[in-house]
Each structure stands twice: as C-alpha cells, then as structure tokens.
Image (cartoon, rainbow, N blue to C red; front, side, top):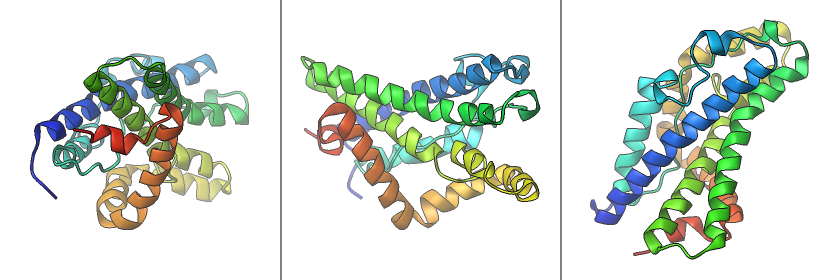
Length: 223
C-alpha cells in the first residue's frame, strides 16, 4: 500500500475538490435539463442550485469519497466515485419518452464536458507542474464520474437508461431498487473491486488520456 506522502495528500485534496465541483455541475445539469423539459419537481425541491448542500448524501457524497481519498494519500489511485441524493424527477411531467433519456444523459454529458475542458487547459500548456497536475486530476476525476454513473446500478444514470428497455413491471422493480444504492456501490467498489475497478479504471484512463493528450495516471504521480 505504501506510506502517506506529501504528494499523495495533495492528490487526495485535488481529487476531493474535483469531485465536489464535478458533482455540483452534473447534478445541476440534470435538474436544469428536467426543469427545461417541463418537470417542476427539481425547482420545487430546491435542486436548481450549484450549492453542494442541495445534493449532498452522507454515504455517497461523504464516506465513499473519503475512503477513496485515504487510498489516494498513499498513491493508490482507485477511481473517484460519488453520488448525490436521488434526483427528484417525475417522468409524468415529461411530454415525450425521449425526454427521460435526455435527462438521464445530462449528468454524464456534464462530466464529459468538464473532463474535456480540463484537457484543453492541459493541452494549451504553460502551466506550472502543480497546476498541471491539478488540471489532470480534475480531468481524471470527471472522467471517472462519467464512467461510474453509466453503470447499470439502480439509482445511477446507467440504470435509468437500462430501465427504459424493460417491461413496465420489471422497470418499476428495477427503479425501486435504488433504495439499495449504497449497498450496490459497496459491493461494486470494495467486494468485486478486482474485476470491476480494473474495467472502470481502463475506461476512465482512456477518456482522460484522450482529453489531455497525456498519460494521466503517470502525470498525476510525477515527483
């Protein structure tokens, strides 16, 4: 596992900052998209906000990122993951079936946009080493949010899209399973970690590398 290092502590701090910004933007994007398409629920629930308190969930936005941050302090770069309180979306207000698809992909698109934006900053160049490292961590973290939230785990965006392909009764059961999201995430990240994390890390690194034009994992750990 290694020991705590000054570099590891900086990496963990950069990752947590990137997660906070990335989660705020993606949750706002989902809420704003739903409201634009006619669903007043996000506005009524106070979710049309970039304030982290609007979406913060103690386990998914607090404990999970904290556990991952501890690993980052010893430079074990487990992919960043976090989720917020379930989005208050009422499909009954959406006029077209494709509107639910649009709402579901709004979050992942926001994460992808942030990763690409950070990648462009890196590609422009001229940044001091530490600022460049921060930009790469930001790109990597948002690439990880993109990949993580596309998993078909009830409560995440991927499951909402998969649910639309299921028969009505199965869809209802599948969506209602989001109450067990914390358990699913624990199993995925910490029980079947060897199988799942290797796959997720490979995709996250590919997205980050494509955005920045660099080997993100290597750059993050440069001394």
